[in-house]
Amino acid sequence: VTIPGRALSAGFDVLTILATYLLGRKLLDARVGLIAAGLYAVTALAIQLSHFYAVDTFVTFFVTVSLIFLARIAEKHRWGDYAAFGFFLGLSMASKISIFPLAFFVVLAVLIRIGRDYDWLPGSLIEGTEDRRIPNRRDLLLAAGGIALAALVTVLIFRVAQPYAFMPAGSEEPIDHEALG
Image (cartoon, rainbow, N blue to C red; front, top):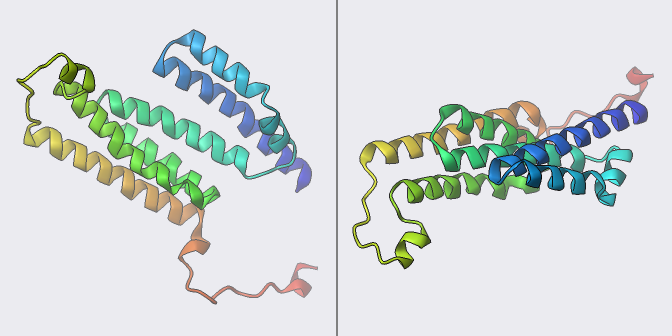
């Protein structure tokens, strides 16, 4: 599995370069995306991990794509963005469980969007705006529903991609080495 594994790892690393460009373009502009992608492409650790078929190249790709969807969630409410974030977060966690704190960032993205929509961001507070609006029930329900959708998709994808995490302790079947040849 070494050669196919290295090819897969290198492929995901190349996709991470593309995702880095898309994230930089989404957050600022195309020049920033190109600079970020270029810097990632020549990073020694990324090249080394890609060469040795490490799980980190897969995780890095899934997390980078998750960040793209978080940026979209912070911008506008779209059900598909919540589902896509949950999908890539589930794959990230199936690859490396220590990524789970990323799940809390969907709440931060929603708070940023609501803060922007209702003038709660620090810039408006500094200017002394006293007439801040209160979010209506519909917006809060949409936000809660989006977070719930992201959580549900994350758990489902994690369940499918990492089924061993749901097995009871000590229930692993021993490997029959004779049957494997």
